Length: 320
Image 1: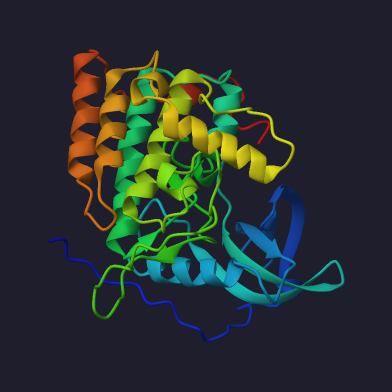
Image 2 (image 1 turned 135 degrees about the horizontal axis):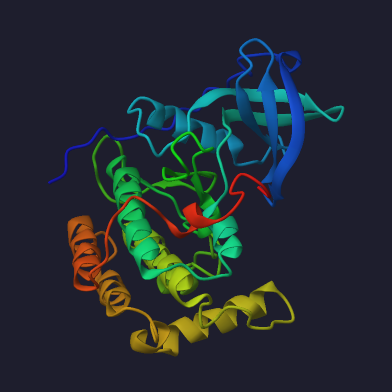
Protein backbone atom coordinates (compact mmCIF):
# COMPACT_ATOMS: atom_id res chain seq x y z
CA UNK A 1 0.00 0.00 0.00
CA UNK A 2 1.23 3.47 -0.85
CA UNK A 3 2.53 5.54 2.05
CA UNK A 4 1.66 9.20 1.98
CA UNK A 5 0.91 12.12 4.18
CA UNK A 6 -2.84 12.76 3.98
CA UNK A 7 -4.08 16.23 3.29
CA UNK A 8 -6.31 18.09 5.70
CA UNK A 9 -8.10 21.23 4.61
CA UNK A 10 -8.05 23.86 7.32
CA UNK A 11 -10.90 26.34 7.68
CA UNK A 12 -9.10 29.31 9.23
CA UNK A 13 -9.25 32.49 7.15
CA UNK A 14 -6.07 34.22 6.10
CA UNK A 15 -5.28 37.76 5.10
CA UNK A 16 -3.13 38.65 2.12
CA UNK A 17 0.48 38.35 3.25
CA UNK A 18 1.34 41.62 1.54
CA UNK A 19 -0.78 44.67 0.97
CA UNK A 20 -2.00 45.47 -2.54
CA UNK A 21 0.36 48.41 -2.74
CA UNK A 22 3.38 46.07 -2.86
CA UNK A 23 2.26 44.64 -6.20
CA UNK A 24 1.97 46.28 -9.57
CA UNK A 25 -0.62 44.57 -11.77
CA UNK A 26 0.66 44.53 -15.35
CA UNK A 27 -2.08 42.99 -17.49
CA UNK A 28 -4.84 40.39 -17.62
CA UNK A 29 -3.56 37.12 -19.06
CA UNK A 30 -6.57 34.83 -18.60
CA UNK A 31 -10.20 34.84 -17.53
CA UNK A 32 -13.05 32.42 -17.10
CA UNK A 33 -15.87 31.35 -14.82
CA UNK A 34 -13.40 31.28 -11.91
CA UNK A 35 -12.42 34.94 -12.29
CA UNK A 36 -9.29 36.50 -13.77
CA UNK A 37 -5.53 35.97 -13.76
CA UNK A 38 -3.24 38.99 -14.02
CA UNK A 39 0.51 39.19 -14.34
CA UNK A 40 2.10 41.33 -11.65
CA UNK A 41 5.43 42.44 -10.23
CA UNK A 42 6.48 42.41 -6.58
CA UNK A 43 7.92 45.88 -6.06
CA UNK A 44 10.18 44.70 -3.23
CA UNK A 45 11.86 41.83 -5.07
CA UNK A 46 11.14 42.53 -8.75
CA UNK A 47 9.79 39.00 -9.06
CA UNK A 48 7.22 38.42 -11.80
CA UNK A 49 4.11 36.81 -10.35
CA UNK A 50 0.55 35.88 -11.21
CA UNK A 51 -2.46 37.02 -9.20
CA UNK A 52 -5.62 34.97 -9.50
CA UNK A 53 -8.55 37.22 -8.64
CA UNK A 54 -12.00 36.05 -7.65
CA UNK A 55 -14.76 38.62 -7.30
CA UNK A 56 -17.27 36.27 -5.66
CA UNK A 57 -15.80 36.69 -2.19
CA UNK A 58 -18.51 34.81 -0.30
CA UNK A 59 -18.99 31.67 -2.41
CA UNK A 60 -15.83 31.37 -4.47
CA UNK A 61 -13.41 28.48 -4.93
CA UNK A 62 -10.14 30.34 -4.43
CA UNK A 63 -9.94 29.72 -0.72
CA UNK A 64 -10.15 25.97 -1.26
CA UNK A 65 -7.49 26.23 -3.95
CA UNK A 66 -5.17 28.11 -1.61
CA UNK A 67 -5.46 25.39 1.03
CA UNK A 68 -4.48 22.77 -1.54
CA UNK A 69 -1.45 24.71 -2.74
CA UNK A 70 -0.39 25.34 0.85
CA UNK A 71 -0.37 21.61 1.56
CA UNK A 72 1.56 20.85 -1.62
CA UNK A 73 4.13 23.50 -0.73
CA UNK A 74 5.52 21.24 2.00
CA UNK A 75 6.70 18.68 -0.56
CA UNK A 76 8.40 21.14 -2.96
CA UNK A 77 7.35 19.17 -6.03
CA UNK A 78 8.65 20.64 -9.32
CA UNK A 79 5.26 20.39 -11.05
CA UNK A 80 3.29 22.43 -8.48
CA UNK A 81 3.50 26.26 -8.64
CA UNK A 82 4.78 28.12 -5.59
CA UNK A 83 2.34 30.36 -3.72
CA UNK A 84 3.22 33.66 -2.07
CA UNK A 85 0.02 34.86 -0.48
CA UNK A 86 -3.75 34.66 -0.28
CA UNK A 87 -6.50 36.81 1.14
CA UNK A 88 -8.93 39.62 0.55
CA UNK A 89 -7.82 42.55 -1.57
CA UNK A 90 -9.17 45.64 -3.27
CA UNK A 91 -9.46 45.25 -7.03
CA UNK A 92 -11.08 47.88 -9.26
CA UNK A 93 -12.51 49.52 -6.13
CA UNK A 94 -14.25 46.33 -5.06
CA UNK A 95 -13.49 43.59 -2.59
CA UNK A 96 -12.06 40.39 -4.04
CA UNK A 97 -10.13 37.28 -3.10
CA UNK A 98 -6.59 37.06 -4.43
CA UNK A 99 -4.09 34.20 -4.74
CA UNK A 100 -0.49 35.07 -5.58
CA UNK A 101 1.59 32.38 -7.26
CA UNK A 102 4.33 31.77 -9.81
CA UNK A 103 3.90 33.35 -13.21
CA UNK A 104 4.22 30.40 -15.56
CA UNK A 105 4.22 29.90 -19.31
CA UNK A 106 1.61 28.83 -21.85
CA UNK A 107 -0.91 26.03 -21.32
CA UNK A 108 -0.89 22.81 -23.33
CA UNK A 109 -4.08 24.02 -25.00
CA UNK A 110 -2.35 27.21 -26.16
CA UNK A 111 0.62 25.23 -27.47
CA UNK A 112 -1.70 22.75 -29.18
CA UNK A 113 -3.29 25.60 -31.11
CA UNK A 114 0.14 26.97 -32.00
CA UNK A 115 1.05 23.53 -33.39
CA UNK A 116 -2.00 23.51 -35.73
CA UNK A 117 -4.10 21.31 -33.43
CA UNK A 118 -1.88 18.24 -33.69
CA UNK A 119 0.93 16.88 -31.55
CA UNK A 120 3.31 14.16 -32.70
CA UNK A 121 3.07 10.72 -31.09
CA UNK A 122 6.43 11.35 -29.42
CA UNK A 123 5.14 14.49 -27.72
CA UNK A 124 1.83 12.89 -26.70
CA UNK A 125 3.47 9.82 -25.16
CA UNK A 126 5.95 11.92 -23.17
CA UNK A 127 3.14 14.21 -22.03
CA UNK A 128 1.22 11.14 -20.92
CA UNK A 129 4.08 9.98 -18.71
CA UNK A 130 4.38 13.39 -17.06
CA UNK A 131 0.63 13.68 -16.56
CA UNK A 132 0.45 10.25 -14.92
CA UNK A 133 3.24 11.21 -12.50
CA UNK A 134 1.47 14.45 -11.60
CA UNK A 135 -1.92 12.81 -11.09
CA UNK A 136 -0.32 10.00 -9.09
CA UNK A 137 1.19 12.58 -6.73
CA UNK A 138 -2.10 14.45 -6.32
CA UNK A 139 -3.90 11.20 -5.53
CA UNK A 140 -1.16 10.21 -3.06
CA UNK A 141 -2.18 13.26 -1.02
CA UNK A 142 -5.72 11.92 -0.75
CA UNK A 143 -7.00 14.41 -3.31
CA UNK A 144 -8.66 14.28 -6.72
CA UNK A 145 -8.43 17.22 -9.14
CA UNK A 146 -11.81 16.83 -10.92
CA UNK A 147 -10.94 19.18 -13.80
CA UNK A 148 -8.12 17.52 -15.74
CA UNK A 149 -7.87 19.27 -19.12
CA UNK A 150 -5.20 20.79 -21.42
CA UNK A 151 -5.84 24.30 -20.10
CA UNK A 152 -4.83 23.21 -16.60
CA UNK A 153 -1.39 21.93 -17.57
CA UNK A 154 1.07 24.75 -18.16
CA UNK A 155 4.77 25.05 -18.94
CA UNK A 156 7.58 26.86 -17.22
CA UNK A 157 8.24 30.47 -18.18
CA UNK A 158 11.27 29.55 -20.28
CA UNK A 159 13.65 28.94 -17.40
CA UNK A 160 13.72 25.23 -18.27
CA UNK A 161 13.38 25.72 -22.04
CA UNK A 162 9.61 25.13 -21.87
CA UNK A 163 10.07 21.47 -20.93
CA UNK A 164 8.79 21.47 -17.34
CA UNK A 165 5.05 20.84 -16.98
CA UNK A 166 2.93 22.11 -14.08
CA UNK A 167 -0.66 21.47 -13.05
CA UNK A 168 -2.84 24.37 -11.92
CA UNK A 169 -6.40 25.26 -10.87
CA UNK A 170 -7.41 23.26 -7.82
CA UNK A 171 -10.68 25.11 -7.30
CA UNK A 172 -12.71 21.94 -7.80
CA UNK A 173 -10.31 19.60 -6.00
CA UNK A 174 -11.75 17.33 -3.33
CA UNK A 175 -10.55 14.87 -0.72
CA UNK A 176 -11.49 11.33 -1.68
CA UNK A 177 -10.28 9.87 1.62
CA UNK A 178 -10.84 10.77 5.23
CA UNK A 179 -7.42 12.09 6.36
CA UNK A 180 -7.80 10.48 9.79
CA UNK A 181 -9.33 7.07 9.02
CA UNK A 182 -8.17 6.72 5.37
CA UNK A 183 -11.66 5.53 4.53
CA UNK A 184 -12.68 6.23 0.96
CA UNK A 185 -15.66 8.50 0.39
CA UNK A 186 -18.87 6.62 -0.49
CA UNK A 187 -20.07 6.27 -4.07
CA UNK A 188 -23.04 8.63 -4.23
CA UNK A 189 -25.39 9.04 -7.18
CA UNK A 190 -27.33 11.99 -8.56
CA UNK A 191 -24.29 14.26 -8.71
CA UNK A 192 -24.20 17.18 -11.12
CA UNK A 193 -21.35 17.35 -13.61
CA UNK A 194 -18.25 18.84 -12.02
CA UNK A 195 -15.41 19.86 -14.31
CA UNK A 196 -15.38 20.28 -18.08
CA UNK A 197 -17.85 18.23 -20.13
CA UNK A 198 -15.44 17.61 -23.02
CA UNK A 199 -12.99 15.76 -20.78
CA UNK A 200 -15.33 14.50 -18.06
CA UNK A 201 -15.46 10.75 -17.45
CA UNK A 202 -18.48 8.69 -18.42
CA UNK A 203 -19.29 8.02 -14.77
CA UNK A 204 -19.22 11.75 -14.09
CA UNK A 205 -21.83 12.23 -16.83
CA UNK A 206 -23.89 9.45 -15.26
CA UNK A 207 -24.07 11.36 -11.99
CA UNK A 208 -21.68 9.22 -9.95
CA UNK A 209 -19.33 10.61 -7.32
CA UNK A 210 -15.87 11.10 -8.80
CA UNK A 211 -12.79 9.21 -7.63
CA UNK A 212 -9.24 8.53 -8.84
CA UNK A 213 -10.36 6.68 -11.95
CA UNK A 214 -12.15 9.76 -13.24
CA UNK A 215 -9.04 11.96 -13.24
CA UNK A 216 -7.27 9.29 -15.28
CA UNK A 217 -10.12 8.94 -17.77
CA UNK A 218 -10.05 12.71 -18.29
CA UNK A 219 -6.29 12.47 -18.85
CA UNK A 220 -6.74 9.85 -21.58
CA UNK A 221 -9.28 12.04 -23.34
CA UNK A 222 -6.64 14.80 -23.31
CA UNK A 223 -4.10 12.48 -24.95
CA UNK A 224 -6.59 11.32 -27.58
CA UNK A 225 -7.45 14.95 -28.27
CA UNK A 226 -3.77 15.78 -28.71
CA UNK A 227 -3.35 12.81 -31.08
CA UNK A 228 -6.47 13.25 -33.23
CA UNK A 229 -6.98 16.99 -33.02
CA UNK A 230 -10.59 16.51 -31.96
CA UNK A 231 -12.71 14.26 -29.76
CA UNK A 232 -15.80 12.51 -31.24
CA UNK A 233 -18.21 14.53 -29.08
CA UNK A 234 -16.47 17.83 -29.61
CA UNK A 235 -18.65 20.53 -31.14
CA UNK A 236 -22.01 18.78 -30.71
CA UNK A 237 -24.84 21.34 -30.89
CA UNK A 238 -27.25 21.99 -28.06
CA UNK A 239 -30.00 24.49 -27.33
CA UNK A 240 -28.58 24.87 -23.82
CA UNK A 241 -25.82 23.54 -21.62
CA UNK A 242 -27.88 20.64 -20.27
CA UNK A 243 -28.89 19.45 -23.75
CA UNK A 244 -25.27 19.57 -24.87
CA UNK A 245 -24.13 17.63 -21.80
CA UNK A 246 -26.77 14.98 -22.51
CA UNK A 247 -25.59 14.56 -26.10
CA UNK A 248 -21.96 14.28 -25.01
CA UNK A 249 -22.93 11.66 -22.43
CA UNK A 250 -24.80 9.58 -25.00
CA UNK A 251 -21.79 9.55 -27.33
CA UNK A 252 -19.41 8.52 -24.54
CA UNK A 253 -21.91 5.90 -23.42
CA UNK A 254 -22.62 4.30 -26.80
CA UNK A 255 -19.49 4.82 -28.90
CA UNK A 256 -17.15 1.80 -28.60
CA UNK A 257 -13.70 2.54 -27.24
CA UNK A 258 -12.03 1.41 -30.45
CA UNK A 259 -14.03 4.07 -32.30
CA UNK A 260 -13.23 6.75 -29.72
CA UNK A 261 -9.57 5.93 -30.34
CA UNK A 262 -9.89 5.39 -34.09
CA UNK A 263 -6.86 6.56 -36.03
CA UNK A 264 -4.50 6.82 -33.06
CA UNK A 265 -1.93 4.51 -31.50
CA UNK A 266 -3.52 1.42 -29.82
CA UNK A 267 -1.94 2.36 -26.49
CA UNK A 268 -4.69 4.90 -25.83
CA UNK A 269 -7.55 2.43 -26.24
CA UNK A 270 -5.66 -0.01 -24.01
CA UNK A 271 -5.42 2.59 -21.25
CA UNK A 272 -9.03 3.73 -21.68
CA UNK A 273 -10.25 0.12 -21.40
CA UNK A 274 -8.20 -0.26 -18.23
CA UNK A 275 -9.35 2.98 -16.61
CA UNK A 276 -13.02 2.31 -17.35
CA UNK A 277 -12.66 -1.15 -15.77
CA UNK A 278 -11.62 0.29 -12.41
CA UNK A 279 -14.09 0.15 -9.55
CA UNK A 280 -15.01 3.30 -7.65
CA UNK A 281 -12.53 3.00 -4.78
CA UNK A 282 -9.88 0.90 -6.54
CA UNK A 283 -6.26 2.06 -6.44
CA UNK A 284 -5.21 2.56 -10.09
CA UNK A 285 -1.90 1.12 -11.28
CA UNK A 286 -0.12 4.29 -12.35
CA UNK A 287 2.92 2.13 -13.06
CA UNK A 288 0.94 0.04 -15.55
CA UNK A 289 -0.20 3.14 -17.43
CA UNK A 290 3.35 4.52 -17.56
CA UNK A 291 4.69 1.14 -18.65
CA UNK A 292 2.37 0.82 -21.65
CA UNK A 293 3.15 4.42 -22.66
CA UNK A 294 6.90 3.69 -22.47
CA UNK A 295 6.45 0.43 -24.40
CA UNK A 296 4.60 2.25 -27.18
CA UNK A 297 7.44 4.79 -27.31
CA UNK A 298 9.99 2.00 -27.78
CA UNK A 299 7.88 0.05 -30.28
CA UNK A 300 7.57 3.15 -32.46
CA UNK A 301 11.39 3.58 -32.39
CA UNK A 302 11.05 7.08 -30.98
CA UNK A 303 14.00 8.94 -29.49
CA UNK A 304 13.67 10.85 -26.23
CA UNK A 305 15.82 13.90 -26.83
CA UNK A 306 13.99 16.05 -24.29
CA UNK A 307 12.30 18.09 -27.01
CA UNK A 308 8.59 18.63 -27.63
CA UNK A 309 6.80 19.84 -30.75
CA UNK A 310 6.53 23.38 -29.41
CA UNK A 311 10.31 23.62 -28.95
CA UNK A 312 10.60 23.87 -32.74
CA UNK A 313 8.22 26.81 -33.01
CA UNK A 314 9.66 30.17 -33.89
CA UNK A 315 9.21 32.94 -31.33
CA UNK A 316 7.94 30.59 -28.65
CA UNK A 317 7.93 33.43 -26.14
CA UNK A 318 5.55 35.52 -28.21
CA UNK A 319 1.79 35.31 -28.26
CA UNK A 320 1.24 33.98 -24.75
